[in-house]
Image 1 (cartoon, rainbow, N blue to C red):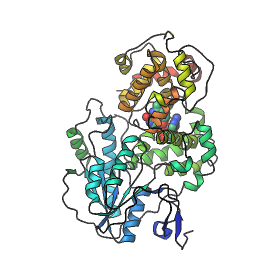
Image 2 (cartoon, rainbow, N blue to C red):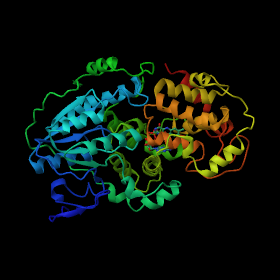
Image 3 (cartoon, protein in one colour):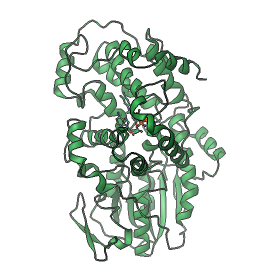
Image 4 (cartoon, helix red, strand yellow):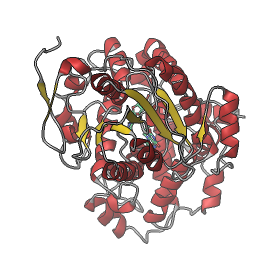
Length: 481
Ligand SMILES: Cc1cc2nc3c(=O)[nH]c(=O)nc-3n(C[C@H](O)[C@H](O)[C@H](O)COP(=O)(O)OP(=O)(O)OC[C@H]3O[C@@H](n4cnc5c(N)ncnc54)[C@H](O)[C@@H]3O)c2cc1C
């Protein structure tokens, strides 16, 4: 039902904003919109959607909100995406995935009657320059430090209103909780009753005004029409070319949606029983697509919910509670990628065991090459280095073993972050930082005390063998080209 009277949006920073819901359709934006500055709408000829985290057209609240505003203001729509060569751990693997997705976005965004500018520039610089002619800037929301910094710079530099629309989360992070949560249990309690309130997808709109011509920008722009364009751009970017493209995982919203459909129709039925088994292939492998905003988590939620309303598979627990706990962690802690983010009990217990004799020590090179005495760990590392993805259960084992094999826990922590961010397509993500922190005690509780780990939960190879067909997993990884 669409209310006819103006209503009040819940705004996170600057109080309330009255708007007519009929303009933007249903409740899809409630709680997702934040004014990042208190400037007025300008007189420029277009609304600028600065796409950064949500790299898709499909079910993108920020894009649809920008179109609704453009239509209301009778302005055109310009969308800008800034490609930086300086993103932490920028390499051929993660950029190939991203650019393949952007190529599709560049094609589909034409349906919105929007001009799409792919800038070879720092994202904030590109946004600020195009904002000089804009009536309003709309931006999506990512949760890591660099994305926050860019938004702060843009919001404080532009002369017009800058509005953030949060679309890569089910329950907006501050509405889920106003503080750092202790564990999945504490967050679950807070969001359980809210999830259904935040599952409205935005209405699919088209910009009414003709496409606008913009002044030639001071930065270079690129067109991504074909895979050859992607290849060419990739080869010219000053990024790390030693980490090659994944041979198995390719980017783009269409691929993400197909993966989701296959997961729901064929794999979901076995998810609860087999999701931990690395020799089986029943997980969704949606994390790279979620990481680059190539698919909406709400679309995933709704597709799964339709098949499994009670979440008997436990998938929605992972997608919503675990994923949004990771976002909560990164949002409320600036040190989310550091050892200092661990809870007091974990730091204390690891400190007590700092000088315990390790069963074996490996240097970084041996670990990166995956040549330890543990065939399961080596297989997991090979899966990561070759394909850019590691099975979820093996990620836990992988992180725990680093703690056991490095002289000090801080070293293990830093190496885990560096390797995950470098090799994993879905790395540099709140899930990665929270997952690594979990291996060291975050979001967990103290367990029985033992050497090296203290009271941090321990995992060993015997546990893997008891539960799963580990020789099958190792064989599959050996067969990887
Ligand atoms: C050491 C370590 C490192 C990790 N690094 C990353 C990373 O870099 N990027 C990343 O996205 N995830 C990371 N995870 C979390 C998790 O392992 C992956 O999200 C999951 O394995 C991705 O596979 P999938 O998409 O097939 O998951 P599915 O089982 O199909 O789950 C669906 C979605 O739910 C979310 N999810 C699942 N498990 C978790 C979890 N434990 N915590 C938070 N969200 C979860 C993910 O978004 C995932 O795509 C890490 C976990 C650990 C222990």
